Image (cartoon, rainbow, N blue to C red; front, side, top):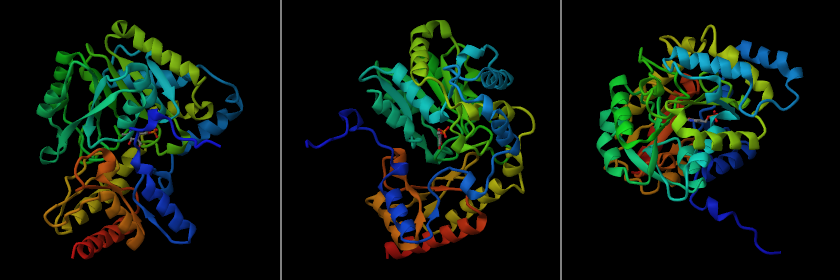
Length: 404
Ligand code: PLP
């Protein structure tokens, strides 16, 4: 039989968060080792249960969720999303502007496939959540990375963005709060970004899946609420703030001059129809999630588990000689720098593989987030404080020995 190879469409597509190092971790676990996994932002395995009301709503509605539903999603779920964004200042949002998906992941791919022609460029942050880069490549587009500036709280570097724009640039992705850096952007800064998008007629893709995971009283501003005259697509879902990543339920909201985007919306509607409909049972949790008491606050306010874990991660990382970490003000990650003068890493994937083999600790290398130099790693702040402490101390010891 002929060799069966992957499609050429996948040659430039890369998603290393679940790459070869994870396979090695699975192998170690199969051999009976305990691996401390600090690699994926999946709250449930770390004891962060979804609110009980969400689970009950899914159970209650399960018998009525057997058939296909509307291709864009359940009416009650979309209405709840609409009201949520109206309250966040997007006054023109209507029910037809909302698409429910099997996680934000499916919607990111749909949003790119509906927009990009071969060779079209999309501005994407570096570092990024790498699905954005992968989805652009899969759709025939060209990801163009703009730099986020570690010296400036990891805010996007506007000068770099300006230099990267070309006649082929179609849009810009903003991840706020950010994965992997944990940065949350202030309103004035978002307004500058909006002005830039306005001048260059860019569509803005605002990935706001961590919009409620905020520390130290920081405010989150939905980008679309600052830009009624620009086409924006906002993404959010149940996976993080509602700790229900396995429900695979997210949403996408179109805002701004929709009459100028009829063709794009037609494309989105077609892609939504082609997948028939999103997972029916878990859409019933969306209304419960968005209304009422927000239990995530118990976790992120002082005394809350997520805040304490963020604090200890940041503090202990900075205590390792040659390691520095900007304080994350949102999301579930820290993205420390390993000073190249102290730790001359050549291949950061090899570094995290060796850490795994020697210490049974699983991190993700910075280059997996399309960061150009091998001098960062990402650590998830979901484990209990004792586990984080143990992992970070052992990471420090490992670095010391590795470069001795
Ligand atoms: N966007 C960002 C920034 C993420 O960090 C993630 C998951 O880690 C996603 C999107 C995907 O989320 P979902 O579980 O809704 O597919």
